[in-house]
Length: 111
Image 1 (tube, rainbow, N blue to C red):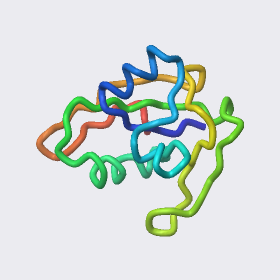
Image 2: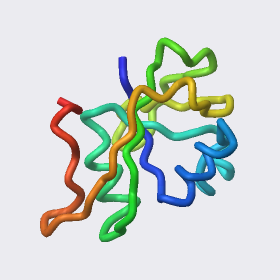
Image 3: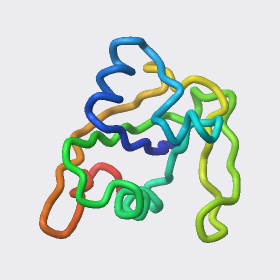
Image 4: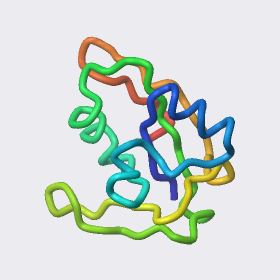
């Protein structure tokens, strides 16, 4: 199963350079790396990245993540949280997440 992480360009570049990350500032504050399912990613983008350009959508393979927990969060839905570094070996693919007139434009391959 694939889950998704939205990164700013500098965060994605740092992960590629370092080979892993503990996440964005919100992740560091909460103590885990936040992810979304395909169904949740659009709402995550609208809530936390509204109007923000220069984003990347990173698809991660849950089969490669040992410390992944599904926990109740926004609206009572279960969200995937990684209690370990997010590593490049977890990444299935990455794509730019362009900002269009109606919000962020997600790739068709997410469906």
